[in-house]
Length: 108
Image 1 (spheres, rainbow, N blue to C red):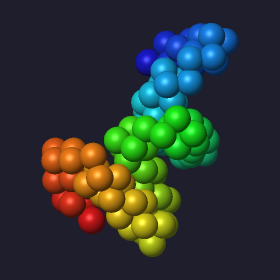
Image 2: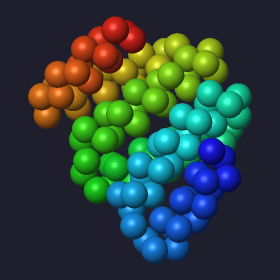
Image 3: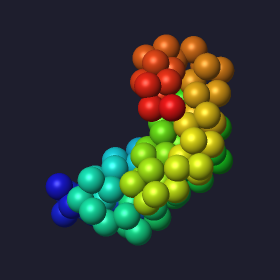
Image 4: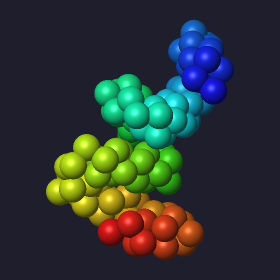
């Protein structure tokens, strides 16, 4: 998974496909978090956040905030996680993403 993810990241960066790059960064950030490499997870999730923010993709940005919140919890940074979850919830509510609203509420 890591090798394939790295190849996908490289291809998306080379082709300048920002949306795909943001999605791949988030997916690989989640993978890195669950694989126990929080520094790599943080870098990838923050890159995803920055890309989705620049492209004005509120639903995708909310999903990335939620993943960053889970990373912050893993890092023992509960206050930051709570802020990220509230930000994610606001974005989901703005676009009417009911399943994501419910999932995020369960994490708060």
